[in-house]
Length: 343
Image (cartoon, rainbow, N blue to C red; front, side, top):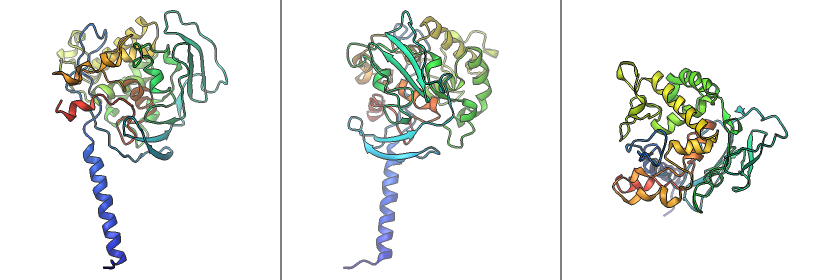
């Protein structure tokens, strides 16, 4: 039977609608499942076990005001390998320099020859090689380097993070980011001034602190973790002394306390940003893939470390991109198994 042209168009439209519904239904809540860690695993703020993961779809279409490139299938994660051009407004004090100065960071993990150029981080590490930074943000790379470089050693002998200072990273200005109609920081809009105020007090990019809040609580001031972690920054109960009216979730107190604690930990780590960000998720030097995922088949699946944490924070949130959106950042997605089997 020969079908009329209008009927064929109708069939095609129905097929597209069904495919779109399948992709949307495959997505769960945000990929923030960062569980409470034991005290010896993490010297910093612990994340509650009520975190939420997002199952990444097999296909995705990037919706952004930035350049949209072609897609291909990522062989290891089955997520779409979409590229996203980094925003033009980037913060790095050496962005416009053609070369930089060498640094001999004692106590670092082999960090050498720090150079930043054209909005890309370029740090050559004797143990981890080149960061592989790129202007295009993909699932596993971006202006702040490749995930395998940030996760150096996790799959081979233990995590040995390259030495990266706060001044080395590339970020988008938070106050510029919030003006973008597609910004993922809309949930943080009521707290922008607080992030700016307290981050600036400690010499940290405000968007980095807001990124932690998004990663930890989706910028929900009322978030309570499984171990009682409080508010936007998910600070632990022992840090709630002096909270106004005993309310540890008070945004001013919570952001001030969380930012100060992050800065103190950064200082105690000798300025190593990757080590400090990892600590925030319970990572430690020497952590292996097996260590990070040991809880996957136990009673507390979400007690795993999120192995995509650094990529999602530095090449996602810090670049004003939702790492759990249509372009899903990461390669491990080790928390997805928790929702696949009901937590």
